[in-house]
Image (cartoon, rainbow, N blue to C red; front, side):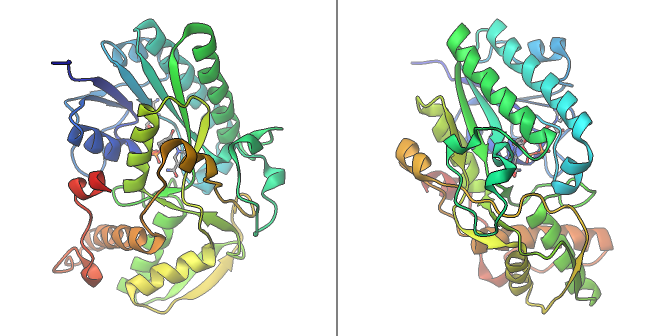
Length: 347
Ligand code: NAD
């Protein structure tokens, strides 16, 4: 019988990494999780979890020992507010993490290496309109990412390509488009738009003050992909033989104002939007999923409404706990049950 594959998930204390560990465990991999911090919401399912700062070379060597495949998710990151205000910190930290982790994987003879890039690599000049043309993978060049976060992602994509060309390390590169779901950062300044919106609307519902602050005019557009689809897509890409960058996201675009209305519907409240100055990122962004469908014979299945419902329910629970309010009698608001891992796998 073949030995069980041993995989490493870096960033396993973070949002996507934590969910990915759970998914890979259900697929019967042996999993080591590594992060600079423990998962914030619930304990890890990893066989082994090590607290390591992956900016350090010796720690990267330790993390990648006796590992077949590496899922490289560790990064210093956050929503627009954090990314636009911390360019030097992000560029330095993420370059150190990325260069040391991939080199350590090579030295330790890892077989496959999946790097998690971002839609933030796409050039600003192709995203100036709310009705943006969906972004194809080749649109990344000529390069002009908006922030240092995107520049680092682009450079590390190239590093992964060269590690295959020069050393034979079998690399994969995924470009996420706005991943959201329960168990992600929802407060503190690093949260992204869907989580921030769920928090604001839960606060509005629970305090009775229905005024919601939105950065800018709220007409900026994005697509959002639910976490359960994301972990399935990551694993499918790792198992494929495709080495070029691949978008992973939904291709349904909504404005931030529409996102707010959708969450308000789920919370069953009327909101008043107050538009305030704030970082908005690019004007419009959407994923072109042509290549995703072609390569993986699959695309994300879970609707924005369904994903937001699960996310809102979880965040409302977090806000209630913080405010010292009782939890809802059931965690299944509006009769929707969270998907079990088995249901996720069979999708
Ligand atoms: P996250 O912030 O929840 O997880 C990243 C994890 O990396 C955190 O737990 C953090 O502690 C860890 N980390 C940071 N510095 C570290 C260090 N020096 N050593 C070890 N661990 C360290 O973010 P996420 O949303 O789970 O993102 C995972 C990956 O996907 C990241 O590479 C991110 O850039 C990428 N990505 C995410 C999105 C998204 O919408 N969530 C979009 C595009 C790309």
